[in-house]
Image 1 (spheres, helix red, strand yellow):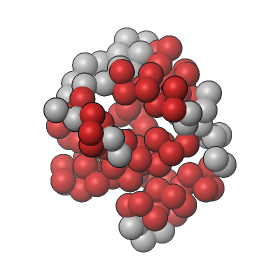
Image 2 (cartoon, one colour):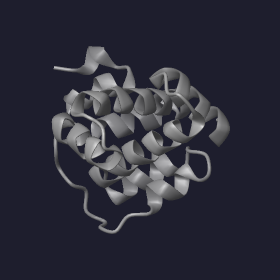
Image 3 (cartoon, helix red, strand yellow):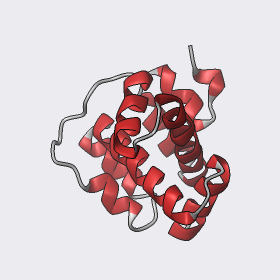
Image 4 (cartoon, helix red, strand yellow):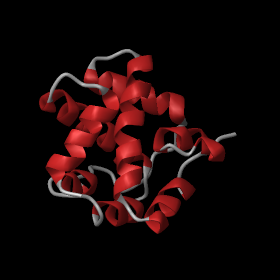
Length: 130
C-alpha cells in the first residue's frame, strides 16, 4: 500500500475531516506503537510500511521496548494529539486497523505476539482479546 492510500484509509476509518488530521493521528499512533515494540519488531514492521512511515518506525531514541497496556497506550496518544482518551482509542483503532490491512499476516501475528491481548481490538482482532 502506498502512503497516500494508507492515509486515505485512516481518514475513512476514523472519519477525519481532512488529510492533515489523518496524517497527524497516524504519526502519533505509530510513534507510540514504535516505543512499545522491540527495536527488531519495529524494524520488521517498518519494512512493510510505505515511506515515510517506515522511517517513523525506525526513528527511536531508546532501543528498549517500553511495557504498558492499552489504556496507557491511549493516554500517550491523547497526550500527543491533544485529544481525550476516548478519542485516542478511536484514533488507535483507525490507524492500527489500517496497519493490519497493510502488513502480511505473518507480520501482523508477530506484531500482536509482542503486545498484550488488550491491543488486539485496535487491529480489528476482537476475538484475540481477553
